[in-house]
Amino acid sequence: MNSKATSEGSKLDGLKWLVVAVLVVAGVVGNSVYSEESLLYRVLALIVLALVAGFVALQTEKGAAFFTLFKEAKAEIRKVVWPSRQETAQTTLIVTVAVLIVGLLLWGLDSSLSWLVSGVIG
Image 1: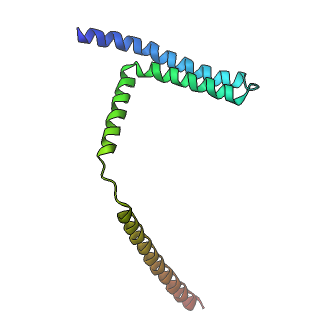
Image 2: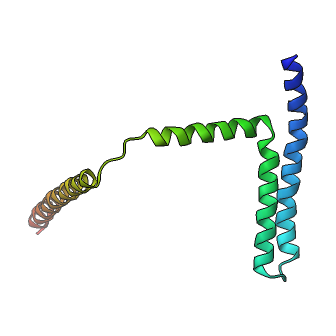
Image 3: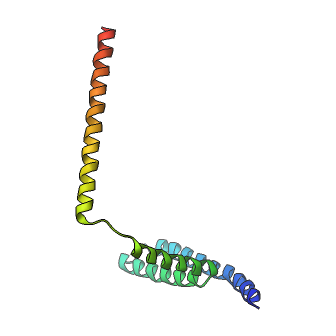
């Protein structure tokens, strides 16, 4: 019985994606046709069309899976242990010093090789 509901849902998903595509095309064409109208009105119309298209897309299987993925990613971000301000400053200082040291070494190597080549060439 569940597979029957899934097959019906997938049949309707194609129609829903078609509605989403029509809404997007309507937004693009409408923005072009009504280019003489105020920018505020066009932006508001595009926002409304985007919200409606997003709502329709979330009603599909792939849209629901995307929303679930989004919620799980948001939960995972909450679990991240972010570095303190002091740890960030120390790490930044270490990276800056390392870059300066490597830069000086490369400058010294370049200068030495340039002096050597100019001595050989004459």
